[in-house]
Image (cartoon, rainbow, N blue to C red):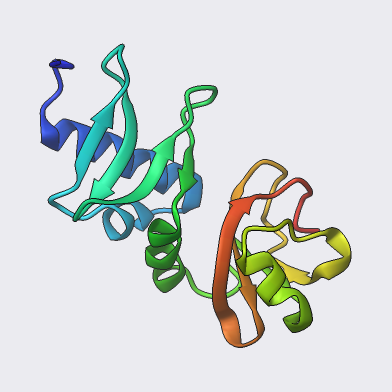
Length: 140
């Protein structure tokens, strides 16, 4: 199905969303040339793929991005500390890495710029990326 948008237009669109959501220049680092797109039945961008791996999904409810772990790795490499990071205690890192929730009592630090609902990078000691997800609380 055709959306009427070119691949370049779709790439520019998701790069602009990433720049808005994570800061300027995040878009080109997160979504390089050669990304592919899975579209919804209405022709909107649903998922952004690179080399067959999902980098992110565009949420239908608000048009923002939810990161896949590969997209989180790319963003982690781009953003300086403490950018969109939630630091959890090392003793719960394996628990969280298995896909479990990081509770507030597990958090030792967080980027004060994080707002509830933001997609964040969950890291353990040494800025080791272990997961990604949506923040339920602000960074402060």
